[in-house]
Image (cartoon, rainbow, N blue to C red):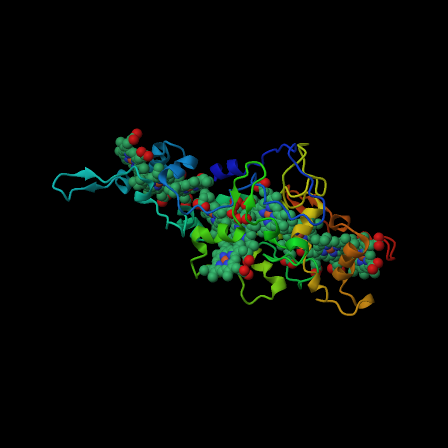
Length: 324
Ligand code: HEC
Ligand code: HEC
Ligand code: HEC
Ligand code: HEC
Ligand code: HEC
Ligand code: HEC
Ligand code: HEC
Ligand code: HEC
Ligand code: HEC
Ligand code: HEC
């Protein structure tokens, strides 16, 4: 837990190399890699890769488990007496005792915590666990519903892979993998018992994202953001684009700005019969409204960004008319 929290530690980032991507038709850059783990496959590691993260000296790391987990010397140090004289079975090669399936499954995800679905124990609050009872919306798909991939907006806007696709990181130009490979190559993309952890083959296209929300629900997604101007605070809508999820209106549109084809869902011919969310969301195209013009984010008592109530008409329409 501690190790990863350190790695997750949101680094402050210099903005010197920032290039403006404000123009509408430029595709999004590959997602930056300052938050969380590098988006790649980790299932073909050597012992020296292991030491790259766990340190060169893993002796203490193991020996402290004698006390903390009540292990015996012989749990790890086995004797082999088959040749007549007894020798210690080699105990320096990580793969003697830890397993990966090269090219298929990584050592961490073959472990018990991952197999139990407890992703949060290592990945922290960047994700949520499938069985923790968190909020996942149940309303119909609409004009602003995100998709896992293949967004229907300009250049594929309106889906995770609009940003989390193959590419090179801005800062280091190291290769960033697409989110499909990053997930499947943990090993869970080979395990047919686990497909439903991330996919719902029965869901209609506009609602496929709900399966992803088992771990990436609104609460975690709207809290992933870097402080881009180093002023010590994150201002939703007041940061540079493409450095997280709530920094600018462009970021909102990255996930929510596709699905124009879903316009008819929940609404009919127009006018007063329009589905109320649709009525408001049409104003994005018609009047250039920004998401945050209507949906404000504030920090709750736990320090997490949440949305102010956007269902009560009088919260915004104070005088009873069409104008707020
Ligand atoms: C990218 C960095 C990284 C690499 C490379 C890496 N690890 Fe880890 N490992 C971690 C982190 C972070 C954790 C979680 C730490 C914690 O919970 O304290 C972890 C946890 C573990 C655990 C505990 C698992 C559990 O279920 O609690 C084992 C065992 C382990 N690693 C072995 C290895 C081995 C063997 C290798 C090489 C094949 C390796 N690691 C490579 C970062 C890494
Ligand atoms: C959880 C597994 C585990 C347990 C339990 C364990 N060891 Fe180890 N031990 C290791 C590993 C792994 C290494 C080798 C690490 C390396 O060299 O990278 C090691 C290394 C050693 C070494 C060589 C030290 C060195 O500096 O290279 C000795 C001696 C040793 N163990 C003795 C013991 C004794 C005695 C006990 C019981 C009191 C014990 N170990 C319990 C895993 C364990
Ligand atoms: C001789 C067997 C053996 C070898 C070799 C070995 N380990 Fe382990 N390791 C264990 C056992 C057993 C555990 C405890 C698993 C458990 O908690 O059930 C463990 C636990 C760990 C943990 C988790 C520690 C914690 O605090 O929970 C890490 C990280 C780890 N090993 C990394 C490595 C790395 C990296 C190497 C190679 C440099 C390595 N191990 C080699 C047997 C070994
Ligand atoms: C024991 C700690 C541990 C647990 C539990 C764990 N992970 Fe990981 N995860 C890691 C480590 C360390 C890495 C980087 C190295 C690797 O992949 O083995 C990683 C990498 C990943 C990546 C690729 C990195 C990225 O940013 O795209 C994905 C996806 C992922 N894990 C998904 C999951 C899912 C889903 C679960 C829960 C079902 C889970 N993990 C549980 C430790 C863990
Ligand atoms: C507008 C571009 C954009 C879109 C669209 C987008 N993201 Fe991100 N995402 C980012 C950026 C930028 C980061 C921060 C990268 C960094 O600095 O580490 C990030 C980070 C993350 C992280 C934490 C760090 C990591 O790399 O693992 C998760 C989890 C994540 N995004 C999930 C999603 C999911 C799920 C979707 C689709 C519902 C999505 N993102 C869509 C830009 C985007
Ligand atoms: C840990 C999460 C995870 C698990 C488990 C998982 N996948 Fe995926 N899968 C993804 C992600 C992320 C993508 C890319 C986004 C998308 O298109 O849905 C993806 C994409 C796909 C795609 C391409 C979807 C498309 O529309 O192009 C197929 C097919 C697929 N997965 C099949 C499977 C199968 C079969 C299993 C079980 C053996 C499985 N996945 C398990 C996360 C997962
Ligand atoms: C079982 C939990 C789980 C489910 C379900 C899940 N993910 Fe993830 N996802 C993770 C974890 C864990 C990470 C790694 C976070 C980190 O970097 O520490 C991750 C990272 C991501 C990221 C950012 C890094 C990357 O790999 O690109 C994206 C985008 C993403 N997921 C998309 C999806 C999509 C799309 C789906 C549905 C098809 C999905 N996820 C389903 C656990 C899950
Ligand atoms: C990483 C992708 C992503 C980004 C970026 C993002 N959202 Fe979301 N948002 C989602 C997902 C997924 C949902 C759940 C949608 C569903 O299931 O229908 C959601 C739900 C919402 C909801 C409804 C919450 C509820 O209580 O049901 C609002 C309002 C919202 N987003 C506004 C925004 C605004 C404003 C921004 C920009 C500041 C933004 N979103 C950025 C993915 C994202
Ligand atoms: C002009 C104000 C306005 C703007 C601009 C706006 N919204 Fe909304 N949005 C609303 C209202 C009002 C509702 C709730 C309507 C109701 O339930 O009666 C809503 C509902 C939602 C919902 C829940 C959908 C549902 O079907 O219940 C999501 C998700 C959402 N908005 C996201 C966004 C995103 C993302 C943007 C930017 C693309 C955006 N909104 C722009 C006013 C607005
Ligand atoms: C989150 C704030 C918010 C909430 C809640 C909200 N509205 Fe609105 N509504 C707006 C804004 C902002 C406008 C756009 C005003 C403008 O044109 O500048 C608007 C415009 C409208 C319009 C005119 C649409 C058009 O096409 O010009 C109607 C009708 C309307 N709202 C009805 C409602 C009703 C009925 C409810 C409750 C069920 C509601 N609104 C809840 C913010 C909100």
